[in-house]
Length: 278
Image 1 (cartoon, one colour):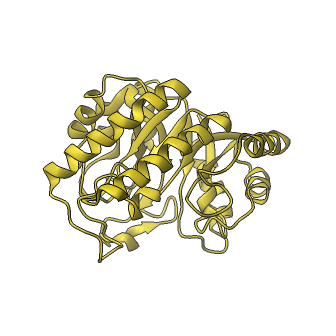
Image 2 (cartoon, rainbow, N blue to C red; image 1 turned 90 degrees about the vertical axis):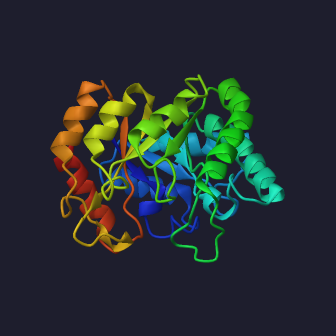
């Protein structure tokens, strides 16, 4: 497996303000094999980024000895594919279609996709969508995106996030399988399932559907968003995770997504990633 850094772990990354070449330089200096870029409607990488600009980014990655492990987006949180507002749904579909193209131009084949939400825990004003309605709208959205993803050879990698949706590995498995396409899979986050399950069980059940893996740690005794702690300081059983990943023959990227930025955290994360995946 190759260790990867999320662009978001660096200062200014989550805000989309950090120049990509600076993020790559930092990732390279810290000994990462790859970097996962972040795309949004505003910032240094957007759905309006051109093919020529993407080619320049690829050259910069190569210069730094890095691969681009994938492209991630949190755009669906604010413009949800499961919103009751049809215009919002249209807007995020348009964004995602274009973001999938940017992903291909960047030479990678996985796009982290938040499929919608029943509830957004960090946006108190966000609408609460009935679970069954959320499921229906999320399915409809991916169905509309799928032809583009298949044409481009980019996987829509659905991440398990704190959206009160797709809460078990069985449901995530069946949600993915309904599309009957290798272009829909999972972007599995080991830390995000800790409150309700066991990461190794999710890995064994999702199997080859897993396109990419996010690495985080979580302290169960805290039990809130404050429970996300630095790697090797929480309750995630990384040995069990590595064993399960080996059992499903996963040898792709494992990306550290340690947010928000804290001084010294990228350095600490790099050392922990090397220790975990040595």
